[in-house]
Amino acid sequence: MRWLAKLVVIATIVGIGAPPAHAWVIDVARFAVQRGDDPAWAAAGFDDRAWPRADLGDVTAPGGPTWLRATVVLEGSLPADRPIGILFAGVASHEVYWDGVRIGGGGVVGDSAERETPGPVVQRHWLPSQLATPGPHVIALRLSAFHRNLALSRPLWLILVGDYDRLDATPPIYLWLAMGSLSGLLLGAAFALVMFFYHRTDRAFLYLCALCVIATALLVAESWRPLVGYTYVWHGPRLLIIASLTWLLNVLVVAFTAVRLPRPGHRRFVGVVAVVISAAWLLPGWDVKSWGMFLGGLGFALGWTIRARRAGQLGSWPMLVVLAVSLALLVGVPESFADVAVFVLIDLLLLCLIAPYAIERSRERAHRDRALVTAARLETELVRKHLQPHFLMNTLTALAEWIDEDPRVAGEMIGALADELRLLHDILDRTLITMDEELRLCRAHLQIMSRRKGRDYQLISEGVDLHAMIPPAVFHTLVENAVTHGARPSATVVLRLSGERHGTRIRYVFEAPLGGEPQVRRAEGAGTRYIRARLHESFGTQWTFTAGAVEDVWRTELELPARSP
Image (cartoon, rainbow, N blue to C red):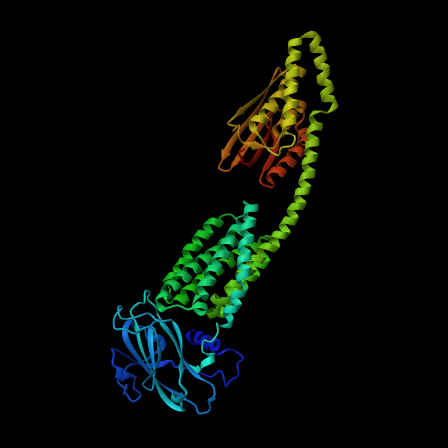
């Protein structure tokens, strides 16, 4: 993998598509190495055969000074009108000598931290034409690195000799590709933030905003060296920043995927993934750490998306394609993934949210329009149910009789009717009301019916949270059905309503004495359809409704999400 990374770097520096005669480059990869300091070690004729040999990437000794020597052969066919340069790339201060002549340096090489001045991590030097004669030459480098603040497995990267204009002349092409995604990241962050404040309940936008911000910060950190440059003392902090942002980015990719395609346990899943990805910090080498983090983040996100696709969740197809292609690029071209592909990935994830979001908003508008029509119909049905002619006529007829026979009872009945109508008026345009309002509506109706039918109708409630929310007239409808269809002739009719809360859900049980044949009661009438419509309007599919005869009572069980005012 190391040779492939080096090949990519060299190809980027010399420029793909440049004329071969102008893009020549020699990669000086193996050196004689010696700790210590002696100006004679720069001379072309110095005998370094006793020095140990090592590849440039294996020279890790901090402190210094350290000398490197190698032989470079210049061919006679090189263009005479093209200047030659020497490129140094590594975490050290340096001096470059060519056949004993000092060509240049970066920083000040010293024998202590006080005497050393950190140099740039990348430095290009011009080689005078009179020194660039065809044949063998000796290149010597004097190095010191007292200001390394982070252990590096490969602190020295490249020593190149080649066409001066092609050695680090411009930022590599992949960097411009990555920078091209910057506007998309910034616009995506702004869009996601606005949409989160508009839709507070959709946390996918919050995670997407954080994802775009972290990706922007990672892009800036990755581009810091090739665009601006810095002395080597900043290389360690930059690597820590990049690794930390990479870890956070991958956790956010998983979190965004889990929130965008939710299933039970997604918070626990994200927490476990964050811990697993943290294990990548233990891998050797900073590039390997980042690669391991991307592998874990994209792998877990892809696995979650595959399960979402199998469940048929909306928006899972495009995310599956984006994550699968990204994972393939990570495995196929790991050296360039963190430099460019990851930022394009974030832009594509942004599209994966925007496209389904537009579809969802369209569906929500249609659903809202249908809900408004349904709500209007339910309000009309509620008024019709309680203000139907036979109810009013029977009640008014009874009032006329009581006014003559018992004015006190007539006054109570008028008050109860006024209370019921007032409560109905108050709840007509509301989706949810409190159980306290619902029970008062039920008892007002029972008071009227008790006077009309000459019975004592009672509603006993146990364990009912008066502040819990319920669609209007749900239990009132059950009470009406119990009075109209239930209860064999009896002086006292007791209706029971119990409530029990289990975490985020509430279970209600309503019991009324049976009257008539049970099989007649099993048919679903207008009242039951009204109840189901109201529950669906308020809770979607998160409710259950069952009813049936149990011994001598008709039992209705209702379970729904617990809501507070």
